[in-house]
Length: 467
Image (cartoon, rainbow, N blue to C red; front, side):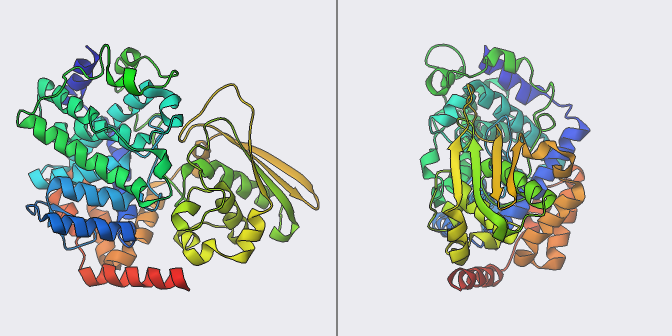
């Protein structure tokens, strides 16, 4: 039985390689960083209000705050904060965001049970392995039909990771996976709204709930990936890979290492990152000034732009999922940052004028792509002629591999406005040492922040938005 084999791998595998642990550590640093800066967003504030309203037992930290709550509710709030800016990492196998669900889940539960750092990172890597294999079995068709893999698959990865931390046996792990299956939901239609970030928090919380309930004897179908009416027969696209073959390759190689994790340089949908890279290359190589540009064409093969649902975005959240806006903003500013998605930035006349010159089109291709998989064609037409480029994958070039130092810099850029310089550096130091920590609660509680500091940051953001 395939559910049995998957559960055995998660429960019994103990030799997590050094390079996998290193990748998990960078994912931890990236996720906590983007979540801390994400606490300034309105959706994070609402999540905090919910957590305080629930009033659960204070066992885990809501990052960037003075709030403590249950592991499930902390994972919920931290997952939302980690995903709201769309600056969190992605996975080609998952066709979605792995760490904004997994890291909040393992950190919150790890803190609650005082787990050591190496156990927490191992749980992350095992959960990631589940995510990659389940997503491949679902195929591109699952995503293109409108499902958001970050949550539909993320609930399984979080249940597996939480179950590992709770030391479930194989039989109980199967119950947790069965329970997770009945919480697998989330639609692409909600992109560009607060609900996209909710997906991440919901997956993290639901995964913890599934594992905890199973540990207390809560029952579910123990073979949810097998036979008639299984999860795959209900949710998978026609192009899904055979799950039996995927399960036979668990840890060979580890998903964290190959195909690996795509860490984002810009806080917008990954499906436009290839296009941005193509624009960057063409602008730099040919010394093209903005005033020279007569038109821009951006071509996507089938399915590769499914998340880019806004041609005429009205606010920053919608702008993150607009090919036209991101291309125009990058060409004008030659960069994309958090300030690119304020209301003032979205409404700039110069941006709107350039967007009118941008054409988005479908590239003929017999294959269908989804999530972070695919390629993008770029054509810049200027008064000097046309310049073209096809970009296959953003992070395959050596220039786009994120180094440890760049991870550290991104973390400090994100965390310093919330925690201050010294505390941000202390959290980074602890995160880098995570594999050797005796108790991850030391790291989680180091992210605690006085309420007035976050309130000040939110007030500053509102001032920028209305400026």
